[in-house]
Image (cartoon, rainbow, N blue to C red; front, side, top):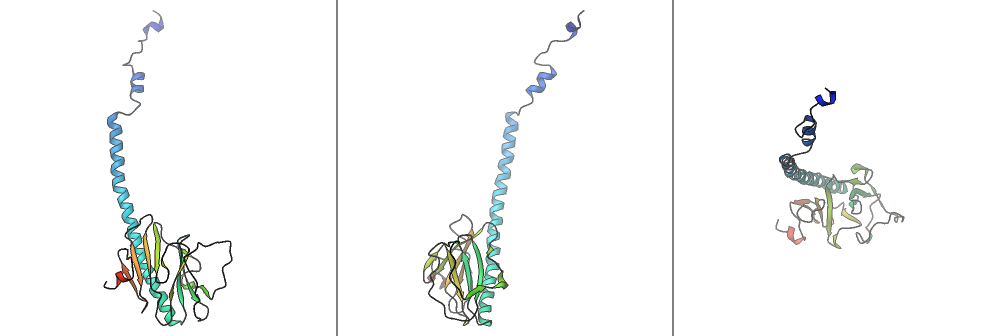
Length: 213
């Protein structure tokens, strides 16, 4: 008998064909994978959101401590101090006067900063105690505006909040929030009479809104 005749013909039930048919995924397996992905996503996204809001809260607490320290330094060292916020790159720093002088009538926040132009001479220098260069906020946290008494709500350019040796401060509200969120967040109110910092766990829309709080 010929050797080829002794081999059984290949059928759809042969091992080779069976392995090829089982190489793909069944509908049940695909649905199971999709269910797992959905479950992980439903748990992971809210957890990340909570973590970011916790980061906003902790950043607010630290920032309040910084502002209180700036106010105290202005009184103790008999110098005008100011918080500087640059909305273009979301950085901040603290400056102090080299010598005590009256402030000029500089406008703030109206124009974007042009890095190609040399800034005018200033009697202010960066206060090394709070960092020798502009500092960024933690990831996911942004400055969402500064409400000033003179120029209203500012959300672009360079904005200053001044603290004076007498204990007086420039009335303002600094907003901190989660990036991409337009509501909620924290409002840091700088009281003018005594320079004290008060925190509201919401967006305070006006200075009048802080009177009876």
